[in-house]
Length: 267
Ligand SMILES: Nc1ncnc2c1ncn2[C@@H]1O[C@H](COP(=O)(O)OP(=O)(O)OP(=O)(O)O)[C@@H](O)[C@H]1O
Image (cartoon, rainbow, N blue to C red):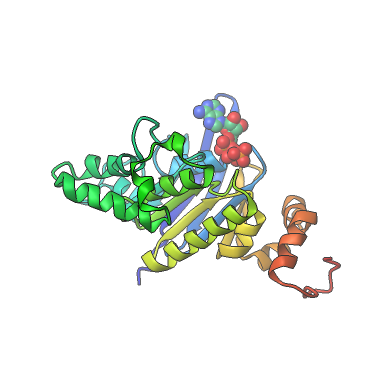
């Protein structure tokens, strides 16, 4: 197994005019892990993701993804962009295309010579992989529920058999049952496809249920990375309030019923 990290970020800086969003940000994402990225609103989680996938040009720092330095000419035969899939907030589906056609967009871009019948077949397969009924492939985004749109966006993200999956707040706007089902799907796909998953979320249940480690953004940097028990030991005020506040405690209680180690009053 390749022990090189899937993503290595060093000294990242992002600024918009006078506003400094990231400064001296370092992060390593291990191959095969699901890493959750949390932080208060506006701390730069989406900007971080956009920097990693090359949509946001940082003002300083270095980002390496699967061995390729982002922003430098591609060294490999395969375009790095075809090795990751992205589910943007809200799905970002093309409204004038059906679900299947949305999934086909990436296939058309990277494999223009592909037989259209094969492309259609692959798109339908990706749609069913995300738990959508066959009939959903022919529907337009406006005909889908919020949960179905997320799955359609996920199908599109999986179109090119990526090694790395970026999910920006995938359970936002879903009811608790829909959110739990989406978490389950993410974990299942991660296991069966051997994906590395970079997951931005505010959802404490998602963090507890499926993330191997969590990275915390605050003060323009990643201030901590670790398992939730490791983060619970932190005395940083934001981390403490987030994981040990009332909502954090109820997510913890749902996962570990009974007294929590460490002698703290959790319930
Ligand atoms: N293109 C842009 N131009 C100017 N400012 C931007 C741009 N993109 C993001 N920002 C600013 O950068 C900061 C971080 O934004 P970002 O969307 O990454 O936050 P976030 O942590 O993902 O927030 P949330 O949890 O609310 O989604 C915000 O203050 C935002 O206004």
